Image (cartoon, rainbow, N blue to C red; front, side, top):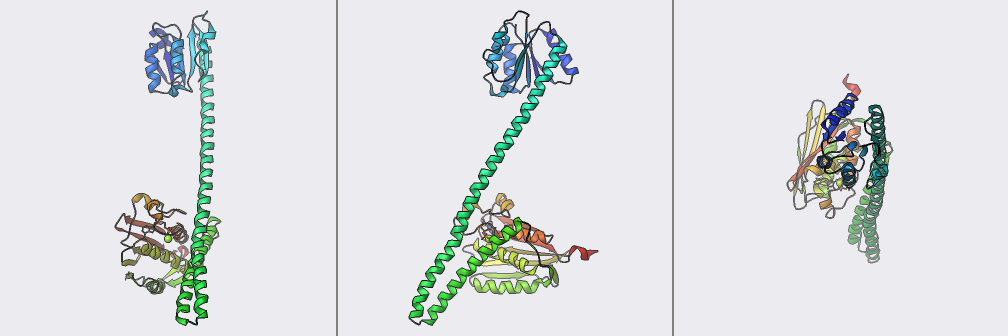
Length: 374
Ligand code: ATP
Ligand code: MG
């Protein structure tokens, strides 16, 4: 937008008309003070400024504007009487472009200058945008670098914890063997096994992530019994977590098409999360349902739950709810892997949760391959 500042209404009208015919948007001010007020409120690409005005003259206006951050890219064309000493023009104004035209105004020259300033403005905008996106990119990369470092230190820590316990158990195990205490040997071996299993899951998750990243997560698709799979999983989970009651609701009642091991991985992730994030509770619920050739499965807990904001992000890679991350161990990979597995089955994954009341994680997947539907 252009601002014309002139104390003579005739000058304003004629200039405004010419500029508007040439598709410029024009605003006007009839004094220096009025111009300053407008510049404070709006951004102008160009100000056409009469030098000789009663009260504040054009140079004073330009000097004042030079201090406004809003006008830092605004150019000024002075309209001056023939003999005005041009050297004053640059005084105090260094931000935008400057030029002058002597009165009486040659409209063609004025239009040419206006167009030039617009072009410069547009180029400046482009440069600014480019600079901004470069700065954003730099910030993004710095952030990614920081996240990577953080990730490496978390992974090392997560790997170190079971390793340290294994080392400890092996030392005491040696002692129990020396004392030929078979019962203690057995319990300690069991502990070692549990820690090895933890390591195994961690490493498997990390490998899955690298497969997902490079698009190498492949599925071994076949028809399998969802009900049998769930029975087996629940048996194992009940043995591993004897304090938890895992209630089973509903049946699939028919075979479904998918990668059984990957679906098992999703169900296990849902259940282990439900148990992990529900300290002090004793029950979780599972639901199975068949509807419109899709199988629905969900795990509902009565644990810490989470806010809406977190619900949208928990499926992101490495995302963990900050406020609770120090209480619970994890890498923030489980749900990211689940989402990729479910998407690989043309399904949907989601969560319904309320902070302090609990969460229900669910997925839907088609029970037949898409080509079977014909
Ligand atoms: P891991 O990689 O070992 O699974 P994790 O459990 O932190 O680590 P995800 O399973 O991806 O990672 O879960 C991401 C985050 O979502 C968790 O850190 C936790 O904050 C939140 N979350 C997941 N399940 C639940 C749940 N049932 N109740 C409350 N919060 C949950
Ligand atoms: Mg998890």
